[in-house]
Each structure stands twice: as structure tokens, then as C-alpha cells.
Image 1 (cartoon, one colour):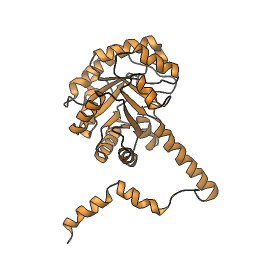
Image 2 (cartoon, rainbow, N blue to C red):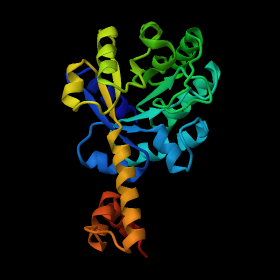
Image 3 (cartoon, rainbow, N blue to C red):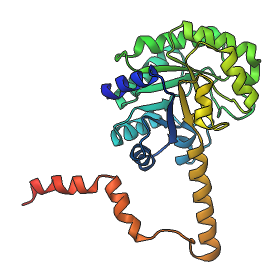
Image 4 (tube, rainbow, N blue to C red):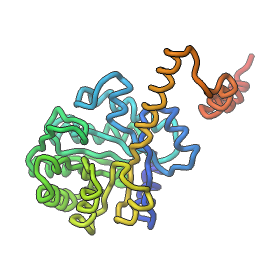
Length: 280
């Protein structure tokens, strides 16, 4: 795990923007790694959805850590994780950081929403006082044992406080020691441009799909967590289920010929080979 953290640090300090696709299960994580992504992002929205809940703060820290551990175990690339609000006040944040670190996270982000939080693109968000979030960040930084663990400060202040509030908070969170600043809820190209302009000089994370990654990189972002995979997984699964229900088949769908590829991706050949050592 420490190796993935140091690798992520080097990537973020390098000249190219890092792209991390949204994943919420190990099969998706393995596919992302196979396709050459240098990092992956554990989505809180997807983690909650996979357990049958909307992203409204209904999952516990333990449930989130369980997914961190599963994903980190399944791949060799750095895992960037959603840690919601840290699941409490400053002392709770310390436990959260240690649990995520032990589970294998290379990075995690903590947001300044009032608990229970909600998805960053939903209406009605509220944020805690700036000073409270600064305390949470200090606690997070004190709690990490591996200095390469990347602590990301997310602010959801855009909707309730506007760009003046975002700018004040982003600069304060960076001054408190956050490694990256994440302004969530960017819905328009104007928002994107404002973020890059007003927060110029800060290491920034972008969440969305407004432009091609090459264009996003030109705005100076260090990390892009690409949400399009989340929507594609839902849309294609929805459409397949609908077609199967209507017609009794999925047109153009693969059959059992795909099974070897899936089992190979999950490491079946290596496990079967290792098992020969214990045959009796």
C-alpha cells in the first residue's frame, strides 16, 4: 500500500493530469487497471448505490472502509477514495483517516458539508463553518501515519455561498495543509473556468465530464475523477435489463465465450496454478 501512495504522489507532482475513473466494485477496478489507468476513484455515490441507497449520508464509515479494502486488495494502482464528511467531528475524522489508510487508500477526500451530506450535484446542500472544517483537516493531517497519504479537501460551498465563499474556503484549506482542493458541484463551463481562474496556483481536483480530459488539463487541474463511467454502467445495465424483459434476449450481447476473459481478469489461472502446490 505505501508504494501506491508514493506513486500517486509522484504522479500528482508530475507534468500530466492524472485521470481516475469512477468505480465501486472490484470487477470495474480490474477493468480500469487493465486499460492502463494509473489511478482509480472509489465513488461514494456508487458505493451507496451498490448497496441500494442514494448518496444521502446513509452509509456508515465501516461500510465505506469495507469497500476501500476490497478495491485496494484487487488492484495495484493507487486508490483515491470518497470519505464523505469524515463521519463526525475532528476526532471522528482521525479514526476515519486511520481506517482508510489501513484499508489501503492512497488518497481520500473530506468535505465541508453538514451531516447528513448529499451528492455534490444535488440541491439543498449546506456547509459547516470554515473553522470547523479547518479543524477537521488538521485532525486528518495529524492522524495519517504515512506522509504519502494524500489528503484532499472538498468544498461544497459553491451552491450555498457562491464563488466568494468557495475561494475563501479553498485557500484556507490549502493553508491548513490539504494536498489537493476539490470544488464539487461544477455543472457548467463557466463554473469550470471560474474555478481555474479564481483558484489559480492551487493544486485542484475536477469531478465531471464537461470537456475532454486534454481540455481539462489545460485549465491546470492535477487530478480528474471521471464520472462518465458511473453513468455508462447504469445506462447500459438499465438498457440490457429493459431489452431482456421486453424481448427475452439482449441483442448483440456476448455469451459464455466471455467467461474466460472475466475469470482471467479476476486471476483464476494464477489461483488454480498456486493450488497445485497443495494437491494431495
